[in-house]
Each structure stands twice: as C-alpha cells, then as structure tokens.
Length: 247
Image 1 (cartoon, rainbow, N blue to C red):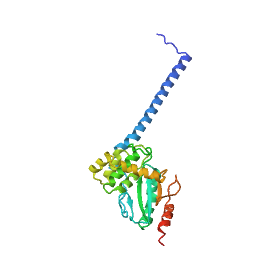
Image 2 (image 1 turned 90 degrees about the horizontal axis):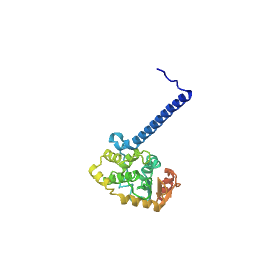
Image 3 (image 1 turned 60 degrees about the vertical axis):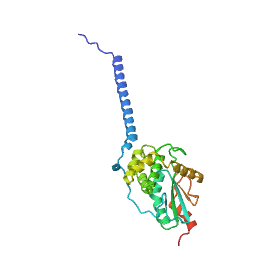
Image 4 (image 1 turned 90 degrees about the vertical axis):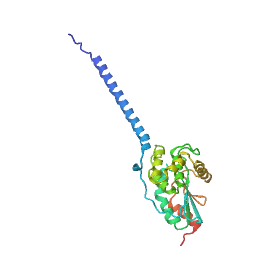
C-alpha cells in the first residue's frame, strides 16, 4: 500500500484550515461567554431575596409627614428633587441630607421636602422603567408611612442604571425587608397607583427649572450650580438668609 506524501502547499493549506477552525471556535466561545455574562447581569438581579439586600438601620427623623420632615411652620422650605437611579443622588442622600436634617430641620430653621424626579427612563413618560418603578415603590411605601425607610433601602441597593437593580422583584423584596403589608403594597405597586402624583412631581420640578438631579431649592430659589451636587454649605447659607443663624 502506497501512502502519498502531501506537498508543502497541501500542508500549508491544511494548517491554515486548522488555524481558521480554531479561530472560529475561539470567536464563538468568546461570543457565547459574553452573551452569558450579559444574561447573568440582566437576569440575576431578578431573583434577589431579602438576604441579598442591604437594609440600613432605622433612624430617628423629626416630624415625619409623608415625603417631608420638620415643622410645618418652619421659615424655610428645602425642596429636593432626585432620581433613585442617580449616583449623585445616592451621594447626596448619604452625605448631605443627614447634615440638613441635623442642623437645619431639627433646629426648626427649615422643612425638608422630597420630590420624585424620575428622568433617567425618559423625561415625562411613566414607561415602567427602573426610575419610574423605584419612585412607584417609594410612594406605595409612603401609603404605609414608611417612605423614608423605603428611600433608604432603595439607595442602599443602587446598581448601574437600567440593569435590573430596581427590577420589580427587587423592589418587592425591599418592601418586604422593611416589613410592609405586602398585600397592600403589591396592589398599590402593580396598579401604579401614584403614577399621576409622580408625574405631577416631575412637572413641578420642570416648572422650577430642574435640569438634573439632585437639585435643591430653598423657598423656590435654586441653590448651587446646575449640574453640580448642592453642598450642605450652599443650602445652609440660603436657609440662614431666610431663617437667621439663631445666634
């Protein structure tokens, strides 16, 4: 039996075919791995349980009344507009708001009022995106006098924008984590009961000139520079100009 010896050209072609095959397999493998990572990134958050959440400790808050804190007759009113998906809002919530409460609200100089301004899903339209749904969840928690607890747990579990961090399942788990009546919460949440209130809050922000979040206003006048996080010092100066320093 005679075995034909391959020519150098045939060997070269065979080697190129093998390299091309390996290249295609590598490309397919990379594409498959990338697709799996995307699936995990988008779908995994849907299965969050209470054990997967960060739940901040409850804190004492002065004169809670729905979405406001402080004395109704305080000389200054601080209006804050936020989107729960906004990282700058999370920073403001954790770093600036506690100072406002301690030094301006507790002292009676100002009342703090929170306003939902869910713009990261698309301005003006309640389309069921994560900004809208987190606002929806906060309002349903407010129905049970737990707006501030829900606000805290939402911010404590903030994720990348529109990546499933505030999926309906996660928001429901957050509601359960703060001991809401889940029957009432689910009915409220699934019905988008406060859709009109959220839209009205958004429209009010636009009337005032909100161009981004967080935005702060003291007695209707914007504080700080548009596009930058309002500082405690800027807000305190505006409040003291109205209420006095108390010294």
